[in-house]
Length: 211
Image (cartoon, rainbow, N blue to C red; front, top):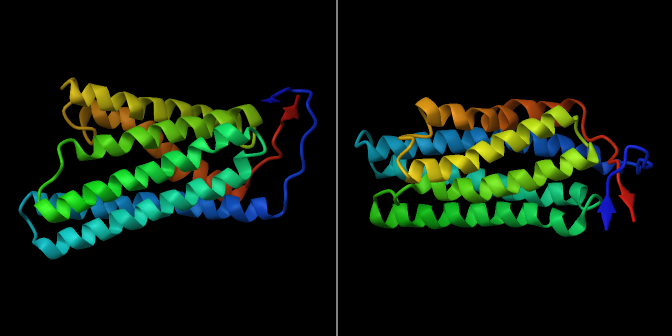
């Protein structure tokens, strides 16, 4: 059983944690850029502006983003398991599920040449759940400053909230208006705040105490 304590001794950070931090930071930026490019190309095809080649390239970019997501999950498990091994398993599991959902939707898109209803919403669910697990563990371990993990918790909670709000028709589009406001904190966290911290500073020693 693992609990946190302000008076608990800090465990030493292995030297390879620094490499993991930099790699994860770069992968977060890479996956967002590739996903943005891929989804933009797919949307251009769906809008009738381009042909199948653009669709295929768009799907390829989204799959590259998905592979980066899986790599993030597997790398972060190496760090998070010192805090709570069982709960830490949930993060790579959610990232693998996220990739599986994305791949299934991509296969549907390529075979049917049309978008599965509410395609991105189904991806948001494992993304948000995984993000909440990640930031809870970062928060209790203090491996990054707590304001960063709090921003992550808020961002992923709002991302998860987008799903029912969109399905119920309360918001029309997660990429504009109220929907954009809800996903913005998560985007800020994933594209700027967490990656830059990991690349520049890396992980702090986790504050944990094993009972």
